[in-house]
Image 1 (cartoon, rainbow, N blue to C red):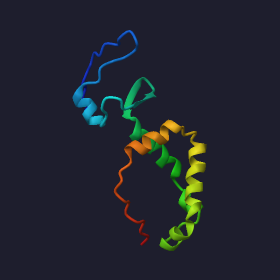
Image 2: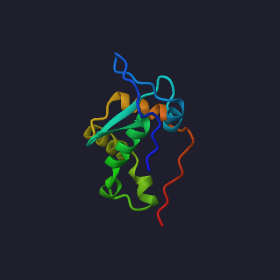
Image 3: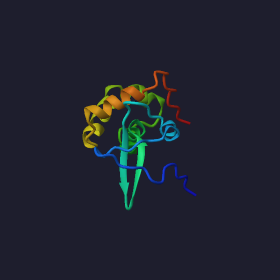
Image 4: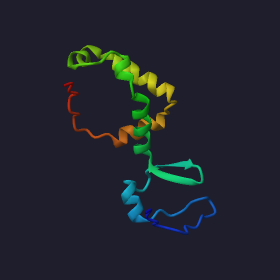
Length: 119
């Protein structure tokens, strides 16, 4: 069952609506942040723009490491610059904009990632 937070939001003259605080918190957005609206059939889904951009990037990355021949830890070390080139090519193919990368930067967690492990 879906949870309806606002069932009759009023559209203001400039096309704006108010997103309730509990909904903003659930989306992880604050004043000045951006949201992405996605139209699916007869409904609109609202997502945190950073989350949506990451999902698009992840979808675009599917299969890229296998194509690049990355199968184990040694391959990861040997790959070096090729990963950056592959990511740039994916960004171009997905037509990511400067804004998309700014969103990634704002959403970035500075905690170092765990190394990839192949078993």
